[in-house]
Image (cartoon, rainbow, N blue to C red; front, side, top):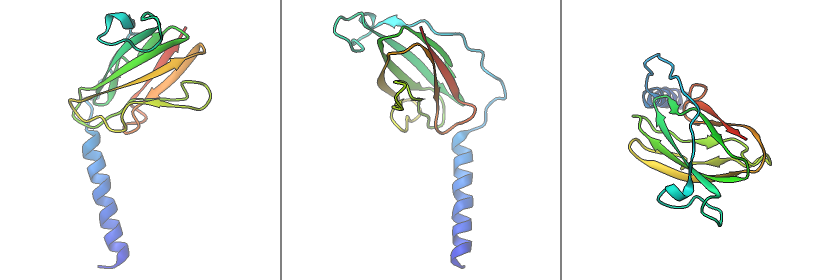
Length: 148
């Protein structure tokens, strides 16, 4: 086999592996409602800030292939601790795009395996809508954070 043939076979195998990892959805779109956040003081551990009530904890389920919830509302100037729980059968992640409006993204672990969770924090200093996504399952696995 020539180098091109080997490369073509390897590429085909990689594509097949990715298709299996992405899994098939049921074809049903999940209807999501905005999530209400809870004060960090009610969580096991404070989510930043110095006064206990300055942060919130938001739990997000990563499923195949959607977020639950896929719409989140949080207060401005608040540190948010996201708990991204993979309840699906494929690898996922949660990536908040340009959350600080200065080009810095916030993200869970790059790979959150099935049955695992990853925590990360983001502070939203400006009102507006911030997109989030699973880097492995675009364009289906997306959501929005409303900062008020």
